Image (tube, rainbow, N blue to C red):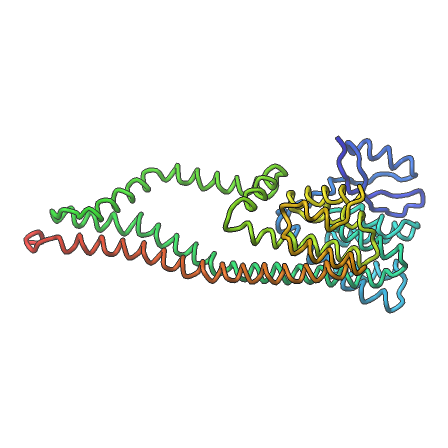
Length: 402
């Protein structure tokens, strides 16, 4: 099985060369590079970034790609040659992103297209990014391509930031409320029970049931810990393994609570990707290809692949969307208007705006409902505990304390 390797090599003149290549192992990679007149110095899997977790690595990489995209969108219109603009942009980033940009610059100086050079670093540049750049090169408007990419990446960053901000308070409330309940179950209730039983009091049914729950929780903490660890492992599997991502994606679309908002979210994402690619001059089939490779959600990816196949067979994009159970009917209607007016990319952008706004409003309403529901839920739990303890205290007659 072939892997993609990020390598460093030197040519016959001693000049250092960076790049990425598919090979079964480093030995095969070395032989491939020797045929090009290069001597392999170092090779490692291109998908790995040692010393960083995958989540932090992806977050940092996306932030740095946004910075260099902004820089290129500003430098290219000023008349700076592409190679010099890449070299200048490399000073704004560091680590693996700078190495990737240096390798891209060297490949461009040797005559390779920028899109082809970017495609060698898939961990940094998505198929959408490469597709927009490729369309910009074909149309001779690379400046506008980077401007569109910068706008798209900034839009994605703002949307993720708003969603993260909305989730912070409920998460903090859940953690603190759960911790408070655990303290009550593990420490407060057992101490009160010991005091009251030592005084010869008979515990009310509510207090006895609460004490039984606390005792069972304390005795079964290894099982609880194992269950929590299993849940974390299942979450990690669901986020990283292809089969796990597919299962999670289908589960989210199957749940009544999340189905509607997820469909709107995927419609917005798909429409935005295709719109950006069409605006850059990409053909419809190519735009659907690149959007399917970039979308991330496996269900939406499969649906875009099916839609592309139908369009290739001669169906209109509106007809292909009409056969889809994933995307809302409004998207099909807007696509139909765009096809009839010859402004498909523009109407896809309008559809993306509509679905993004609808998704954000729905999530805000859900968060607005979740916060008081969590407060009321934890209030009921704490109130029940307090009431049980007060009932036990009041049940103690004065003689029990003499």
